[in-house]
Length: 115
Image 1: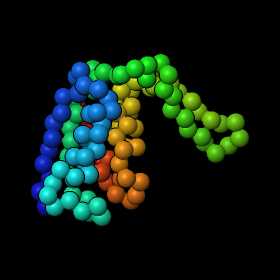
Image 2: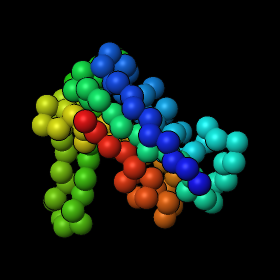
Image 3: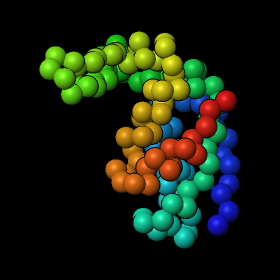
Image 4: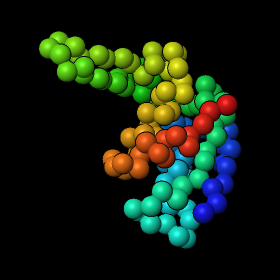
């Protein structure tokens, strides 16, 4: 099986629409030999993640929540703060949640690279 390398420029593109395209490439759904139980996806390299666009009021309203498991330890960070700190992490999280929730997801995410 040959894996291609797709290079995508994210400048001026909307986060969600780009994340769906990347998720399809990582999963391998664009290939005629697609099987859901096999990891046949390609490698994806993303450029200019810090120049993405957001629709609506997502930067001001969307929040990411994480609970540590301890009482009172709910961590909440807004999308705008996360994007200022690390724009790649916002994109990774969007793609991560679009991939299937199984053992292949971590292997697929390893093929997502940034420049």
